[in-house]
Image (cartoon, rainbow over all chains, first blue to last red; front, side, top):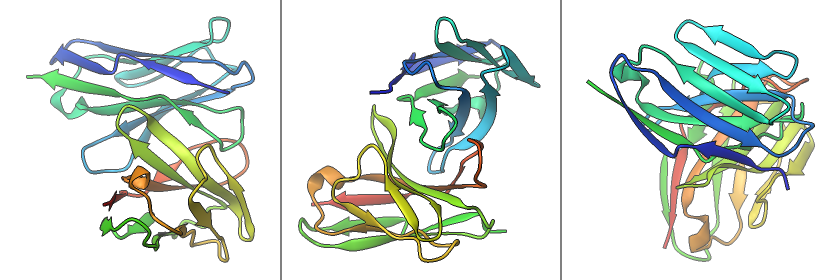
Length: 111
Length: 113
């Protein structure tokens, strides 16, 4: 069945450094790729998304890149801050609301 | 706007007991869904609904029932709880149409002894 692999499972970076989280999907029909941030005790919140007709999207310190040929997409956070510490999930959808989520990355930003 | 509201936040059940997790949204969203979150397994879709009166199964539907009698509410029923259903449950809603942002509730932590 459809699968989304996410790496790494944990990531520690120094404040101010960049963080990169990578996901690979299996269903070539996938065309929508959101990223969610989950803070402790809260539900996930969308931080950025990308559709298959775009290769890159940026929103201030956050960017997502998509390589459809290789079937992978990545989240890039620059100039990390302590408030970026959270669990991040990638997901893939074929255009319906049946998302397949990755297993999550726990990001720790060290002050 | 309250967004997506889940109750209860915490619940402990004994094996075999039944219960209902409540979910309500005030954004007039057509799409609603239930996920479970387990360590190392991400979020897995249990059931979803694309509108009042319409429900369908997700990846892990066994042991759960849902109904959608109104646009606002989407309760999740555990008919006979099992320890394997110990998890954190999230309700999410979205406007509808093409895939887009999911709005999640704050979660319900369920422990089955």
